Length: 363
Ligand code: PLP
Image (cartoon, rainbow, N blue to C red):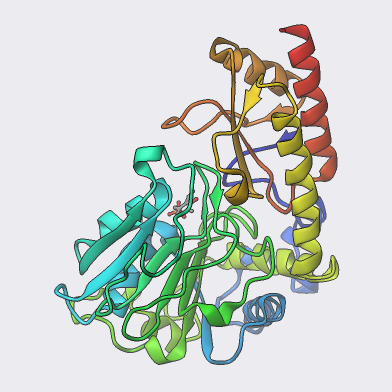
């Protein structure tokens, strides 16, 4: 099937087949990677290579630590203010362009004083605000400015990034759903975090890329597992890490490098998304995507049918033809096609052909 799920999501077939071939006997060791000590030489090789390949993919300098953590991106909603704010009275700015950014904003209120600079909620999260400083005044005393680079539910993606105007120029991004889908200038960010289970692996591992000078300043109440220093000091091996998930991420990073790196991946993603948005926009209103065209996501494409009573039929018939998990998020309804890196062009072409056929059959 072609799996359009928002996450956990489709993974490259070549990666899964390779993992299958190594599952029982990892490279002649006589053991599965799942059965090995995380402190043994095999896993040491796995995690070090995963980190160095990710550094190569994103051009991450040594000024940043790369951490492989647990708890999902949701745990980072708390970890970020715990690590970047000295205490609960410190301020932080949030631009909220969808439900995930809103969750991060709400969780932060337990550990700092978050300030909502802008929210797309009144317009049902279909836009990104202008970044002109006068139209969006930031708090100069804020410890960080937080954005969600790609809102998975609403399909809104930042195409360029706001310049943080807070005291230390700190920009933080949740990149869970567009991580490694295109090149990113990491130096513009102080901290990037991403749950792996959309573009780069299975659930269970969260990648955190954090500027080293920010590590070691966590609030005293910070649990040891949420303190970036704990993990930076022990190369993500403070406790037992999600070994198998990290191993799969490593295979995905290798695959992305073999495909030519993130500039090549972005071209493929832009082509796939382009033909899908063209099909929606060219349907004479039969299908509609509510998101402002300039900020439409390359990863998550939400759309509705003019005759909303046909949406269930559309999703059911698509599933019968091998295109699964197209249902929109329960909070917004409609249809959502998640077309991450591993979705082949053929999957998107098949969906577009199905959309045209469905329209012709149900005018
Ligand atoms: N942020 C974004 C953009 C997401 O899409 C998700 C999950 O879908 C999350 C955060 C939450 O991630 P997790 O389930 O890993 O906690």
